[in-house]
Image (cartoon, rainbow, N blue to C red; front, side, top):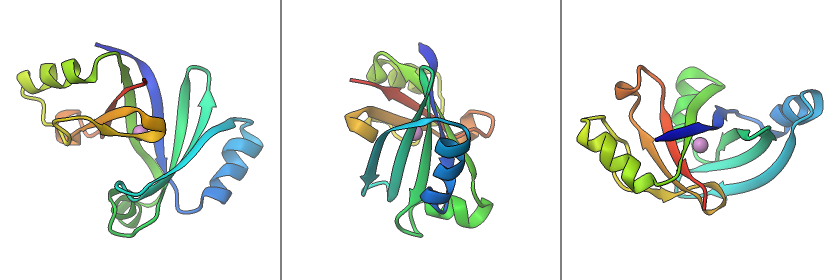
Length: 133
Ligand code: CO
């Protein structure tokens, strides 16, 4: 059902500072940059092979990433798995009793379809399913 790790989401307070490391020192390339107003984040995606690092900066303190930063500081926020059919994947997880944050997909970065799985059901890892269109 899950085909590969699509990206790792990293919460940061300052995108410019983070890019000095990820772009400057690590040599990764930014391929997408977008503000997702409903999720309250600015997201900057850097390619690494067939996967990506997504830097997430809150644009509001009361957004999920804003609360994460306030409580834990910068760090790994979520792990995203690629799926071919997100609706099918969600109904399978639902049938298995896995606790979901999103029962139906919403729009993610670059028009992708995404849904989050609650960390209570994934051994503490906030997990995302992503279907690239
Ligand atoms: Co993500």
